[in-house]
Image 1 (spheres, rainbow over the protein chains, first blue to last red):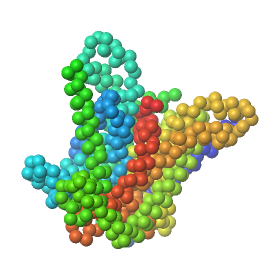
Image 2 (cartoon, rainbow over the protein chains, first blue to last red):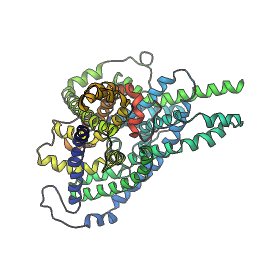
Image 3 (cartoon, one colour):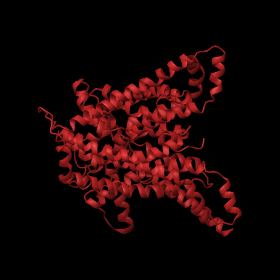
Image 4 (cartoon, each protein chain N blue to C red):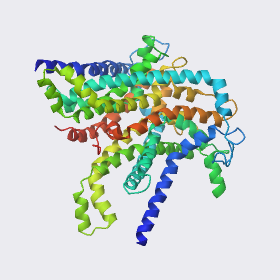
Length: 287
Length: 282
């Protein structure tokens, strides 16, 4: 028994030590940073909570938080509906079903930076494929990147292309693990396929949908790569996400103290969301 | 009967539309990288019929920027492979401990949720202290700093995937080995590890893809010698306007490896992506 005792700690400890020294320690260090006016090339001094108070009057914090929130709501709702539709579609019988599943999950693994960089060409206003097609069909030219609203839309399209597969994989797995009996009962009672979907599938799938949506919300709130590569936050600061603003504060303007404070606010928001998810996890891992 | 035909047609219509949606960017990048510079801005989509493919872009890319791209590829490979191997080793050990043994003071469930919570950590919150710590250690622009960051960041993930996989291996097999006089360690090495091999490979591939695609840490911690492919791509300057042809060759280079590898591990994606929050149909 003592051998077992020893080996279980021996196996777990390396990762725990790693997490403590490379995540928990840096976070504590960052908490200290956020209380200073640390700038590269200057002697830092403690300034208490004034970095956190500055947040309330910083226009770009409000701007980037609003953008991030709108972006999250917009992309997550469309991705959820789209992914649910495609998941139900791939439960039908059709030729090439297996191949379709692989193809539809592939976007999730594309390098986000390369994808957005590629999107520059796709959304290119003079002679990009999208505008070429729109010109052919409707004779219109859309300012995909240079107009703030369309830039927002372009970013959403890239995100939807990349992240719908994520929700799709989750929903599909959820659908396939549903019990058969409720469906048989509903069919015997003469329910239409829409009624079955509305009153059997959706309630049964609800926990899976909620989990997937929460995971995606948390990812969306951290959005950075595609914005850096596609719009750079522009035009102006209209598509600047919160992480993008922290990055600029810390590594363009080198105000690391303030950037650390900003990142702690994001951390707290995500921790609140995680707590909600943790309740669900405690059920899953109940043993 | 008529209703059934309409239903079938609708299914195929949606399948085709969804396939075009998913495949278009890949197709566009690949075909454009083989277009001559004159054809790039024209609405031409089908090679050989609408335009004559050429190797010109790939050759001039290799001549002009071959060195930078090779350096990026080399760094990406080293950082992604090493950190993925470390993730599998550390995550495999921790995952095995969490699947097989009961922890008392903190319950297994609490440790698992603690690991899980790390996935929600915004990378930027750690990137700032990382930058200062690695600067003090003299590891800025060194692949080592990337390997360390990626290992820490993706290891919780591999732990939870591998815990799931070890949980799926019947405990009795190891117990009978113990009865035959093996100790726990050799039971782990001789019985559990070989049985978990496909899962270990899947965890490796997913960690590899995550590390390969990672951008924020690479952007902050490297600038010249240790830049990975995403940073090379994001930093490419354009000589006149937007060079469609080079964007497409580089995107193809960056996108291909993880996408190809990931198609091999479809089966494990669900438990991998949600860290077990959704039980997949196995």
